[in-house]
Image 1: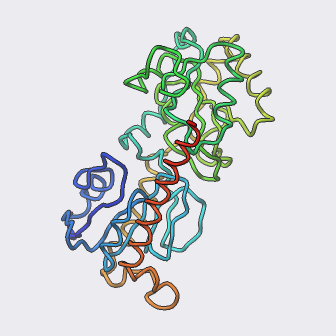
Image 2: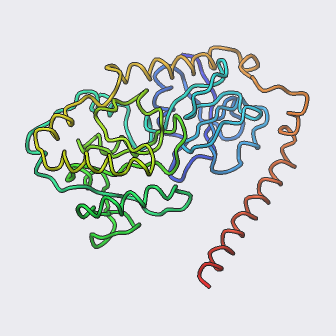
Length: 325
């Protein structure tokens, strides 16, 4: 097996650079050396600026947020958007790895539906805050609550006595789950829609307008915009009151493709193999000259980014204080 020196920086809290989705996948085919000092390849995300410590590495960006990869800095990127950027980009949405094992794709592809699922509670809503989230999510929660109580199990609008400890276990007891993204961006699909699917709770979804490219829209309830509330809520009421119709919808396949795991495995491994089969120097894609040189001046760049980050944090604090007053 070919030996590759890699490292991971700027990922979310709890991300383990020694044991994660990418290391488990790559270790099947490559001899991995996890090297925080002088890696040849660095996977990085959007939660800090440590990537600037590795100016000579081949940089592979992964985002779980709705931001667009910066190819002035990244040699390669994995993200949400439908972008054509040669061999430098692969659309690889967060729902494929966030919180889940790769085998969950097989669970979702071979769903089993029993008639006792009609006896569950009505609907749930599990969110912790509304910072940076589109207000449509809260508006739909309150609008649907006019029909029946929607159990809020997160910290936001909690009405069940406190936040739940195990989200998936909580969702299992409900016929429907409000599964709205924090924003609507084409291709931006997170764990929100997958979590209820894992426990056979029908997602009420808003967000990625191209959701039908990956998921069977007949298996979920898709909200287009606020003008669409009445139509969707009428359908929810119908399904809630008609057991046969509810079970019929629940039996629909979640995915558009039958072999979801094989589809994404082939795409991802082909993308990564293309990077690692080349020599280290051949794998670099970012230009070194021209205006892009601003990205190479790491000391000034990091200094600017840190100051900008601290300034934004301070402004946020000032805003909170102002709101309290």
